[in-house]
Length: 349
Ligand SMILES: [Zn+2]
Image 1 (cartoon, rainbow, N blue to C red):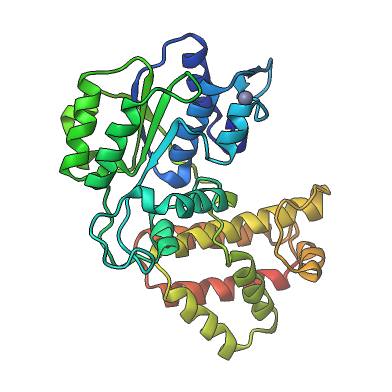
Image 2 (tube, protein in one colour):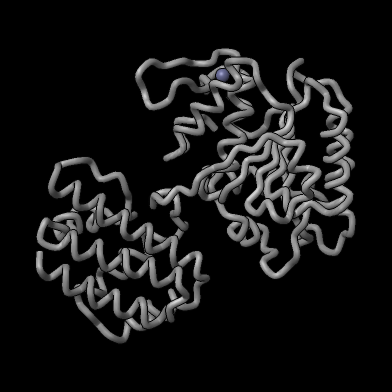
């Protein structure tokens, strides 16, 4: 992961590359913030920059520096296969591991890589549980990970540089793992980098927090990164129904949204609002459409529906719907009302 691929977090990225360039790397850091805001992506980009043998520096750009993306180390990082990078994350037994009791992150490395690459390292913990098919289980980072980490850190680095440990959702560490981390932090090795990626610091031991340097990752409210795999299709179906206003199929669609989690509903609303903004810019400023609805006909025709006469009305409708979702409004009513408002606005173009 290069910093340039993490949207909306240039300020932090610049701070991180500066720290490395000045040789002030702290051996233990806690990246605190939602994964969807880029906390995990930033931690991995940080490790990649640290290991890059051809760091790039820019003048006057939004980023002051970045890893090259092309040296042997960067190439391994892009595939998340660098031998000195150790990833730990919450896990639980699933169909693959059956009822095996001694499972660990090692059992799910390929699934985790696949998940990270698929979601550009911005997937939520909820999406990870879906990916592993363990939604109803208690996922934690357990003893097996603790012994693997101790072993990994006892070896010499393959590339003769840092040994890097990234623990995603570190608040899910069990007692054994937390104690091993604590011990590592108490007796730091200069060639070791521990990056804890945490969403809720209240669940972390204060003795661990006090031994790490805090990197606070601000919430990022943009939309394009919140994309769920089926959002484009869901969006196209919805918009087509709003033109026809077929109450039967529309209420089926609304039921489908109602069945989703509140977080997914919110993410979809962000996605849909961003889609309108993109269409407006395409239609009114001639900018390229930065979104693909997976339907060539829709890609071509829908932007022409979004004009100066309705963009504000549409934006307001979405702002209010997002506000209402955050306040636990009844999803069925909310999506139905929003549908009527959009349908009306689209006809006023
Ligand atoms: Zn590089």
